[in-house]
Image 1 (tube, rainbow, N blue to C red):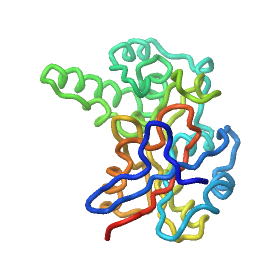
Image 2 (cartoon, one colour):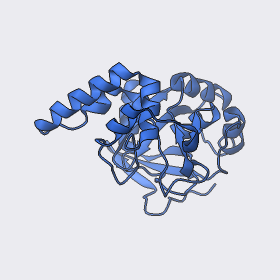
Image 3 (cartoon, rainbow, N blue to C red):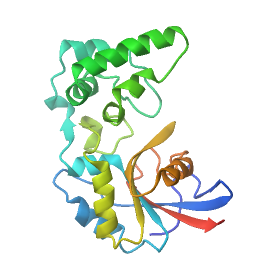
Image 4 (cartoon, one colour):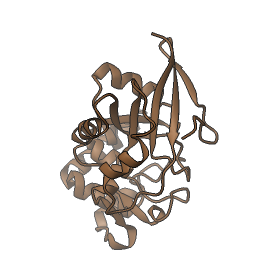
Length: 235
């Protein structure tokens, strides 16, 4: 691993008087059936230094948990087709803006909660509010990834759900890697991010969101689903 940023991204960032490197770890493509413990041991164990924080994208955790589904295998109900029409499409991903991803949101979160989130969102937009839908629908809905033209195959034809028990995944990974490094499971894109589970305290998680705020791993074909945060300067 070389300390080199992905294309269009900066290696270093300054947050609260300290400078950090965000070092991508390039890997092979994770496939259903892969073992996450073995994957982390193969790619992360030999490059972590004391004090580093390992961040893991939620997508590879979910894939290794068997939570990716081919679009062709998902049969959206009429409600999913209707609701998906009103989801705002963004430059970073399709979100729930296609019937298949909305169908999986209905399955994951439950129809009553999705309908309530949609209703509150519709009212909120009348008053210029944004973000009500995902605030109410929650992380399970927010973490659903649909296929885009930038997605690495075979996931350009798949829907990937959010990971199960990300807090436990982070704790297990920390122990697996020797216990000397903090670990976070993150959902980061080009307009922001969330920490789904970590071994950090709340203050550490808030700092981590700032460090990763510009999405140093990128959204495309970089094949860097892991990264290291390494403090360079500062207290």
